Length: 626
Image (cartoon, rainbow, N blue to C red; front, side, top):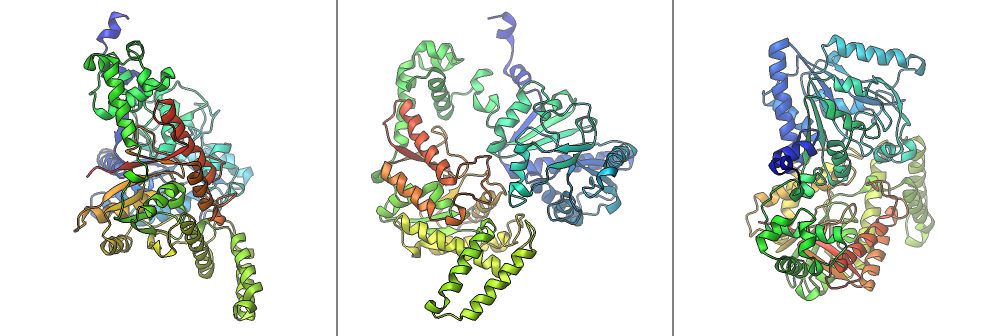
């Protein structure tokens, strides 16, 4: 080892590893507060110095919390937008300005209409410009930025392909505002907003990397585990045209703002012992030993002192004196997480919150059956209707059945025919993403509810266990939802007051395409913060998009082959989500049951590789600390 390496501090190692200065905050809300603070500071300082402030703005789900917080601060008199000029990064092409899918519509609905910005000062690329005039429009956009004095503060999101704006892989650092072809990954990412990948435009107008890098200050923002891998590549990887965000490493005043989930693959979070000394707490020790076992391909109890010294873990070895005590402690911690039915709660009051009508069986279909067998009183609360995730063809199929069965059911056949005809006519008029008729929204809600009941019965629970909360924030008929409000919180509170649960299950899988899981969890958290009764224990589940790792989990529930098969059959009851779900998310072409089966099998297989008892499959849960 070189002498200069021994003298290098952990901070030096971190600076070398993270080539974009990075701030990590606990969660999505903390990130919104942090960015709003910085934007308010920039506006105040820049308008005082120059008479105006120029902001570069982004769209998507990540900035929504920032815009809401800026609106709140404007309403509180803490910030003035009258001397602010804005330039948005991009717009789909072709895209009518009044389309609900346009970024112009997004910006006015979610920000501009709620603050005192002058309309002529809010610039967004025009997706309706004729193609022959597009080059001139792009040049004009660049000229307008220059005329405004350049961008003082540029906010950026990052796509799964590493794009900033719509600068896809292959974009050069000297390019300006232009028309681009969207990457397949980007179009898949946008498919949920457009009700299908086929409806996503293939082109977009975007600021170029050169334009972005001329901003005086840049904030790259990212939230959620689904962004962790590309964020690590952008922050720690080499500069490459394959990942446009890596060019931010060349900027003298760029900062990445990440929530803990998006930062999960950064070295300082994932393997901090590689950078230097760490505090060897039980969780860090457990993660390090499991990582070491994975690196060496050994079971935990077979790890040697040489394994520790060759993989940056000599300090851990020195603390314990030998490999054996470390191995044994970590092995026992992991072993004790495994809970068969006899070690699970029994004869208690349980509330399972399911954001959508299928998250319960997708994520905890095995545990649900075991809890019922243990004589727990269970309420499964479906928080939203999930109606936007029902295809029109499913409504057609159900209406055809009702019309054909009307006489047998003693219904008015003519009335059934009229309803069927009215709905068909509305489908003919509807473009992808348009809001359904209220009657169609209700039909889609009923389809999801009937599927949820069938799935519950499939895992052994009675239909009386189901509660359909139909929270108001979701009832827009659109992909975009309202913020969680008082009425949403009141409905959740009423259920908890009625059920008085000892144990509550909440979705900890926050990577759903439109943030519904996150919003549902926020509503529950608000209630529990002011809960008058004895606070219930909270277990977090995952399944639709991720699974807790062995080191993240507090409880591992083993499933037999028959139990996993029963869980999969329960997922099958959600027929409207079968084969092709409208919002699959996560760039995973597998059906939900296939993802679940693979994850539950892999969790058990991982435990087996570490030398723990061999089980067919496992579900994983995390217990929130009081």
